Image (cartoon, rainbow, N blue to C red; front, top):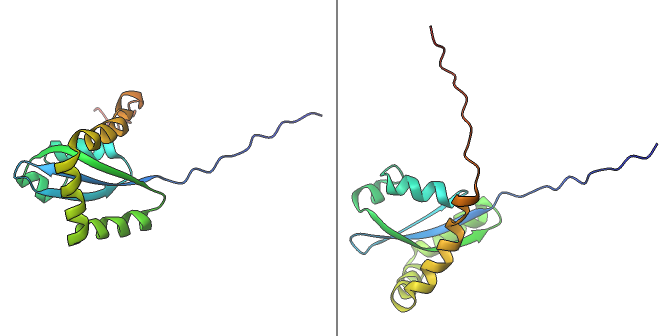
Length: 124
């Protein structure tokens, strides 16, 4: 009997640390597993209190991390003074390059399959 075994590929969840420029020129920094979904939440005012108050203009920075712990640590680093000045420098010196990088990550939206939701409501 000839059986072929399929190798199971274990995928680690990818986490992202991201930065958004808001309409008051402030920078919001966060982390997520799904950049596209999180960006949409921020745009709809359902992301964070800060982006509800100061509307997001563009996501200009995103960085992949291999674990939640790594993303959390990186977010903390970016929220410190040196991290914020690093992000502001990116915004000022090379905004097109930064936005282009994030746009490439957000293009995933076009390749993602829409989620199917179950209708749990019973019709009487």
